[in-house]
Length: 94
Image (cartoon, rainbow, N blue to C red; front, top):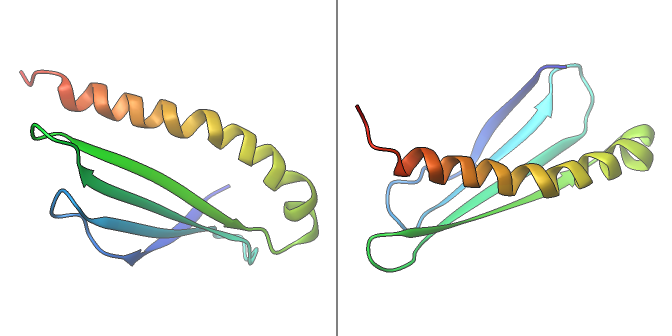
């Protein structure tokens, strides 16, 4: 299944910015999710990234079944994704 999305808030340029993104499938389903990343200074030139999401399952099966399954997956996937990003940012460039 393919998806589409659009930026709904800001473009991070500083260490205290917010970035929001609205994602949805491109199959005509009205369900969507709002993703939000907040970047805050955390001392010594580091930053803390907080990710949140708010899902809007608009159809019966997305509300009853799929959103519950996906919610459990995201609770594992999002921390793993942030950890991978941190590792990539700390790797020396060749």
